[in-house]
Amino acid sequence: MRVTVYVTSRRGILDPEGRAVEAALANLGFNGVSDVHLGRYIVLALDAPSKAAAQETVQKMCEQLLANPIIEEFRFEVEPG
Amino acid sequence: MKWAVVRFPGSLDDDDALHALREVLGQSASLLWHKEERLGEVECIVLPGGFSYGDYLRCGAIARFSPIMKSIGEFAANGGLVLGICNGFQILCEAHLLPGALMRNRSLSFVCETVTVRVEKSETPFTRSMRCGELLRLPIKHGEGCYVAPAEELRMMEERGQVLLRYVDTEGRLDERANPNGSMRSIAGVANERFNVFGLMPHPEHAVESLLGSNDGLKIFSSIAANVGR
Image 1: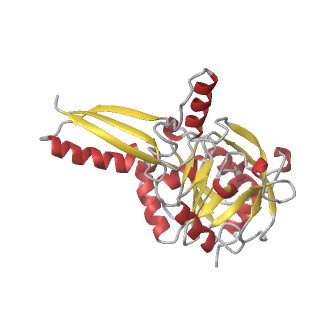
Image 2: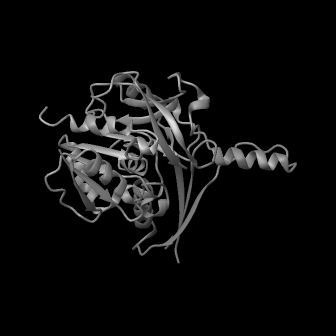
Image 3: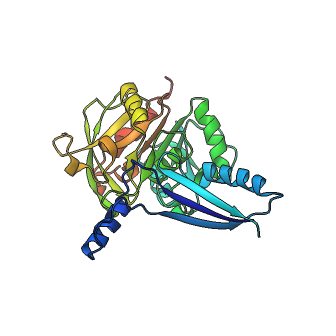
């Protein structure tokens, strides 16, 4: 399975990097930009008997290591192949 | 007192911690490699500063799964004393031995300076040789020291007195300008509910001789050493 994981800062937690990028975009003249959040994009290959089994495994990976639930949110996609 | 300092790949301040303990304080201190699973006879474990595993993913996120961390979790559950300094603090938060998390400094800049911190609670194993309100001058050097915790958790921590150190100005007053990394409520150091695990961003091991500009760090180590026989 091909897995992609997206980790971003949790809503309500101040994201100083997001703020800096937002300010830089405004300085470049891109108006109307708000709520910028930076995150991590993780791709991995996983041997799993089924999509459901892979989803269960990736959920655990995210909870235990790939994201810190105190400050981050995550979502992921699992595709055969 | 018997101490052990843990070395992870990427630890930097392990030797300074050993120097402070052995040479300056005359304590018995051993060095433990992170793959070790047995802690031996030890009364206080120090997780030193540095960049364990290159700070990959998140600071401390990978080190918390080092073999030794399981033993340290059990040691803490049995009431053993654990001190985490800087990266050690980050590891303890990632391991859920301390509440909250440490994020990128609000300024986005690495900070390297001497700060003033105020002791918020005496009568803990880490602060018992100091009085409440006492000011310490300690160095900091970190990029990810902004302490955050969910609002409800923070409220409970304050109620229980788990915030042991706060960044203040040189007069001892809370001031956002004296908060070097944007930490919530100017938090510089926190303990767990049982007060046997303590993490702080400032480096007491770099402030143990007047030649270094301050020896206030000794007060933290000697507070811990004062627990022997209690």
